[in-house]
Image (cartoon, rainbow, N blue to C red):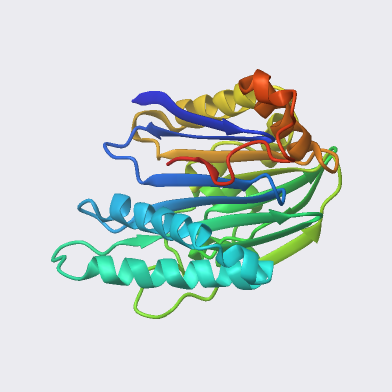
Length: 289
């Protein structure tokens, strides 16, 4: 079992993934940041489809997110519309990547969060999740598009049985299928101290909501993410799934910009005397796959 963690960090964000007991890594993630506007795009994809198609699918979703971000589409469209466009474009990309494949069909889940000013927008398709916490409360959690979730809604299983149900991995929605996906949307006003966790099923099946809440609130985000992924892969065992996770903590207004200016000054001490012109980090900083 591979417990090595591919770890990345940005201001307020920690992200990483581990292969677990699988031969291939089919989870992918990206965190894109524009400090000038305090805008963040966090996205996680869990690929599937057999014979290498899972990796191909997850990479296709990430590539689409990067392309639309670089094109500046998020500047032009309302948050919810941009995320809808991203999901539909990613779906079309996976359909294109399916051409020429014989024994494989690239499909993927997606969960994405756009933070712009005091507003958060999110979408998901499949069983990758987004949790939103405030203090000791879980304010919201996305609902999986799976047969097991349908059984839970009907009262046939309990919430504790959901992650272990044999129908958990039978998805009702995904990117790359024969029809455009039905995308689930959510949104909320942000408050200082709120935290978010975006994760693949390899994480939430192994960690409880309360464990994710506790870890997401730790000041040492890198340490918290490291602990979460180690727990997920250890509990998953030799046959455990890939695990991918992104933590986001909402700080006070202007924190990202102040952090960027301090970092810019530290890296350019001579120019700091003149001032950085109101800009800190590179305008297209990102955390990779």
